[in-house]
Length: 228
Image (cartoon, rainbow, N blue to C red; front, side, top):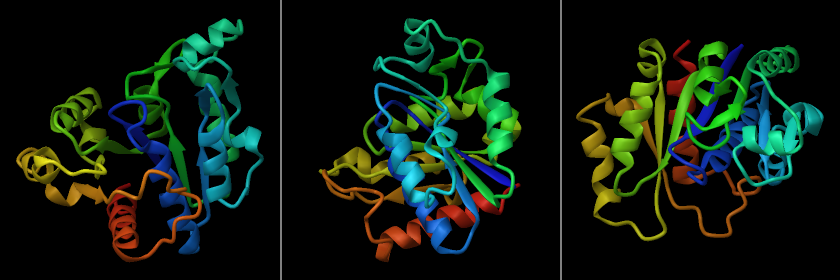
């Protein structure tokens, strides 16, 4: 079983869109795939999207067992409800519900170091799962710096196999057009990918997987799943 962990440079970077599209693509290819959003706060829309993309093969509460009302970092939202979440419990849950699947797509919350529970962030989950990290970033000014900081924050063995996805902006600018070339001076170009702008109201559970989008997902899946 292979674990792909979707993290991002920030909240709203495009993690759920990518996780949903990638899950759908793998499912269409006949891969036994589950998609998880272990923790979320402020609503469950992201978890519902992943649940739907995977064909509802798990219960929603298995996809997203920890959800909190306040739109804050999960650790703070949990504390408002006088609850605590610890890494061991999250790992035990992921391992239990992942049995029988070829690939498990796990989406974090916030950025790589955003606190999720009392003793962990997405980084600690990636390490514990021995997952392939997929870093999602809007392709804007500053993206290369953010991506390099995230790679530096990961253990070397995991940073070396991480993949990067640039999400185009609705109005591309000079940074959008040059980010890939600049990042290519630091990591192999085959490790980063481009997701074209899908539209302001695009629904990732229903977007047709064809053309450039399908090619981008195919290349990402090939690179991420070839690295164990």
